[in-house]
Length: 280
Image (tube, rainbow, N blue to C red):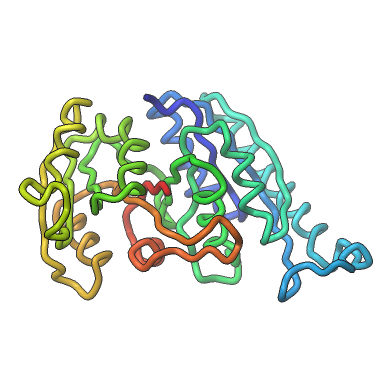
C-alpha cells in the first residue's frame, strides 16, 4: 500500500500559498503525482433548486463568478507549479454547493489521498466546511485536513491515532499505513474505552500488533476524559506528546448535502492545530 496520487482541492486564491505548499511537500515526500483541482462554487436557493430553475439566468446562481474564480485559481497554481519538479496536473471545476459531493467524489476517484484546508469561518472561505464534507463522503479516499498557515506536514514525526474500535477509525488507520510506517512513533490513544469491548482485557492490543507487523512503532495510551470533550482530550494528548499528525475516523449521517458530522469530528475540524487524516 502506498500513496502514488495526491489530489489537492483549492477553492480560494490565498490557498495557492500555504495549502498548495503543503500538497507539494507531501507529493515530494511520497514521490507521488499531484493533481490540483481549482474549484469555483456557485450557490443554491434556500430550499433547493426548483423545477423552474431553467428559467433563472446562470449568473443568478453565481456560475459565471464561480467559473472566473476557478480560472483565476488555476492560473495562480500553474504559475506556482511551473517552478516545481514534481509530476502534476491542474484542472478546473465548477459546482453548485449541493453538487460538491458528486464533483469532488469524481475528482478523487483515483487518488490515494485528498488534501483540503481546515474549515474557516470567514467570508473568503464560505464553503470550506462543505468542501471537507464533500471530500469525505464523495469517495472512499482518505482526506488530510491541513490547518491554515501550515506549508508542510511532517510525516516522519510522531503520529497519534484516535482509536475507538470503530470501522471508520479502522478505515482511517489502514489508509494511513504509509504515514504510520514512516512515523518516528505512533500513539494509539483511547478515551474511556467501553468495558464491554471485545478487547477489554487488552485495549488497543490487536491494533498495535497489526501496525507493528507493518513496521510501525506503537504505544498504547488509555485515558480518562480530562477535558470537556473527547476531542479536546485527544488534542491535549497530541500536543503534550509533540505529535505532528493525527489519524481518526470521520462520522456523519448519510452522503447527502444535509449530512452532519458527529461531535468529535466536528470539534476536531473546528479547533485542531494539527493536520488530521480522516476516513469514513
